[in-house]
Image 1 (tube, rainbow, N blue to C red):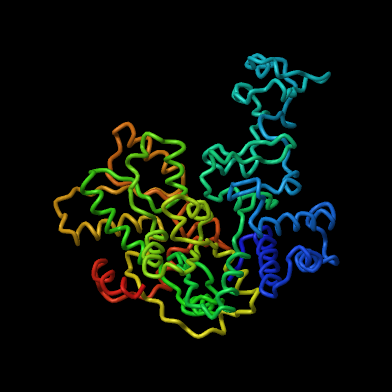
Image 2 (spheres, rainbow, N blue to C red):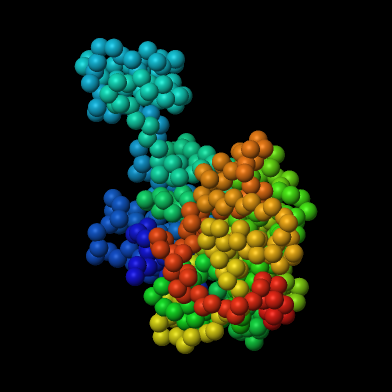
Length: 479
């Protein structure tokens, strides 16, 4: 069973692991740079880039991001500029397919006189004049003009990435929705999400030193059932406790709370878009502001559960663990930051396990059966819609014409929102998930599996046959 999808993720994990290891020991991370760098980039292995010196310079930048990133950059995704220099200039370029034809259709189509020809009549594009309109590419009879996009630009569905003054990628924080697609798809690992792994370790150590371990509470996303497949789910939960958490709670219970409230809100308003995915919410706010009034007023499952925990235990330190990079931005928002202290991805969780020598396969099983099936299925596309449907039944709203539209990926979300804004959407509830497949496809996962939804079904024990409200009445006081 693979642990990581590619070498970029493996390198990212190694840095996080080494930083965590030094933090557990109480060492200054940068003082131990040479040891960290030699463990991540051994000198007797072929360099990843041009030379080992550049490799280790990139490691230094990764360490900085593991420590929280630049103080002058508030983005949760930041660019390592020295790692971002391998992509050729983006935009329309003339390829070797150019035949130097007599027609010069490309030049005729260009309104900016950006196309010139050499002595062999082969075309070239003057980038100082080109406005990337694409007319030349459409007119070329040989298809010799290609629109090259960097991987990060191509996967960014909101146009938040452009070329910086030095040729490196630049992220517009006003446009970025924090989905993490650029982090996952950059083949050089130049786009990286900032981490709170050091802060979390320090909180755990402080709680242990002060005999206040009960303060540390982990709330874990239901999509954990799609990760760490080399061990049983109960062993993973035991591993989290061994890190120093007194309780490990299912965010799926928070999902049940949200589903029930959204059912009530939907009946009242008649049309609603979900509020569970922070990247989807941010997408509406930035790209479809006229639809903002339709966003559910409920918190996300993470924030809903954390709020309940903080109300009962105000001094607790609540750490969300999940697959979502956008959650790192959500916890900075008003109305959320008072409830969730830190966010860790499953990538970072794997690094924590290994930095403390916790072998999941050797752990005892912890029973972890707090939520209902409906709450757990929030992790995949359609799960939220099904849970809302269930709550409508429990609320006696059989006469309500519930017509959900489940969207996975920003492209589907865009289509649904555009139709809704024009009044032609055949639906009254939009479930929006920025990641393909839902949270099981999150960009904070160590690995993505095509069979992730099926793996979830295999690993999640069927809870008692109860309704959502029955389960909430049974479990909520435990938290």
